[in-house]
Length: 100
Image (cartoon, rainbow, N blue to C red; front, side, top):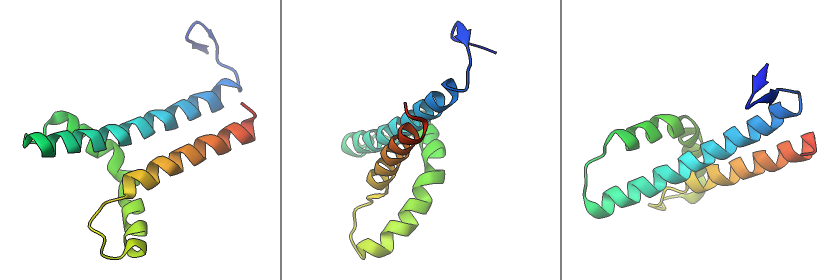
């Protein structure tokens, strides 16, 4: 199997997984930034925010439901922060396990 001009080996698979987790983390961060920009400028949500919502909500919803009881009635959604920390932890564990 050819991957970027070279052969895809077993060493490439963990690197690809780490890259995908980092890309997902970037989507979470972009979702937060887009929501802030839209709320400040009072612009309606568009296609980009809809795509980011569809990509990130499957992870953010369970994190939100787990974090909300811990925070009590705090009106701030910290699920993106927790999800980014979990992504970083997952990347660290993959690097540790696969010795990358």
